Image 1 (cartoon, helix red, strand yellow):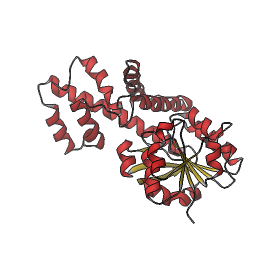
Image 2 (tube, one colour):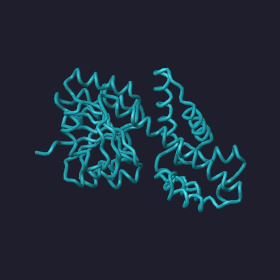
Image 3 (tube, helix red, strand yellow):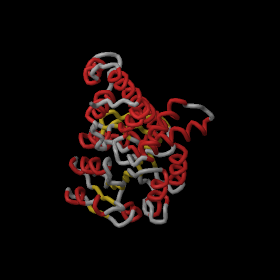
Image 4 (cartoon, helix red, strand yellow):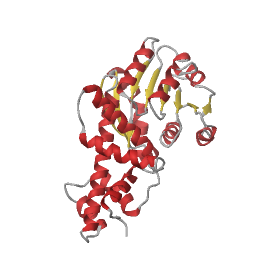
Length: 296
């Protein structure tokens, strides 16, 4: 018998993930704080509940996918949260990107109630969620990971068990650090090309065939050339994620100078009203510093 699923958080990532679970034939209950987020999934056959607590009462496995650490704590541990309604033996799979320390705290509180948890942050953007090709980074008990792997295979392609609680979130922090610094490097390369009188689009084509080639150069490099910053992943969220990177580094007593620098670019972009733009728009800060526009 298929497990009854719940999905909480129906934003740019959560909505297509929930739809893919429905398409695979699973029974999916949903909860969202904004009614407008519900329409697509309820039209596809999901039933909605007015609180996370009530949803959890009817589900075996509950996915969460909300914005930040405080939101996850509220939806899982709050007065109307999952912990108040879930049965012992239920499983919470948190696909949000949050602090590893907060993840471990939530997992401990749930375990005290007999509820299992995996941290399962994802990478691949909205298109990856739509195409069910997400990379999923798993922290938690290995036996719980094995139990839910068939579900994860419905929504992702590169599914890696990393280690105990919080390990998935550490991996996602590493991912966001690499993505942010790579975007900054690509932006600087295009600025150098333009300042030298060389076509950045031709530079991109050449680099894609060499050792500098990457999915970031392919996708975000084209965004920069086109000045197309419609969000695949919002700058405000990437700013939050880099905050997690730096907070984790501080807790560990280490310095990450490259991460600190690119975080400042994201901070400036958000301060100037760019929170809803794609995070690749951080190139605007580099253009301002250089006094050079990539697109002519």
